[in-house]
Length: 227
Image 1 (spheres, rainbow, N blue to C red):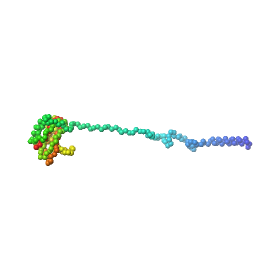
Image 2: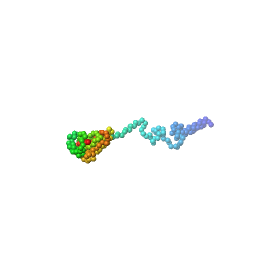
Image 3: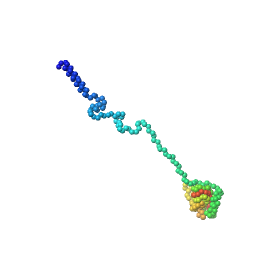
Image 4: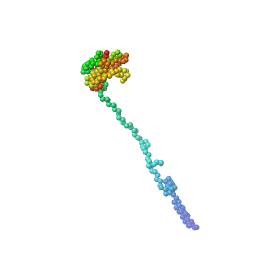
């Protein structure tokens, strides 16, 4: 082979080598290119955009971002308690008055005493008061053994007047009853008409009688008798 033919053969060989090398795939410089080269014809994978590795864009994190302040819960306002309404009607102590100024009651009281406490002596002075319905007036005395007691009361304007005799003890709320009247209306009597009350104890005891305007308003007077 002459020199010209040898050069022509080398040129052809060089061109064929360059053509063969151009058919090889370029070196993989990225994961996606390596995947495509290894699995030709496979669906192209699209890299996730804007999410960190392992994050699922279909399920974003819920709640507040870290560091976001939230308002502290406040307690619901409560209504201030209201005081219970006062019970209807008057109560407490009647206004004491001079029995001489309660002649409308004191006069009939003397007549009532002649009927209820015949032959008995007045024990202390009479008491009198100006009553509203539900109010009371009381008088202390000594319940002496060997004596017998009657107490009477007369009201004017009071439609139901009641009277009770009680022991007085040092214990609050513990005042045993000695007797109560059984009359209806504006007059009341305990131990009247010879049925006076006698102490069972041989020792003197503190006692009191209580006059109450159960219904109606007006003046009332009361007197204790003994023998």
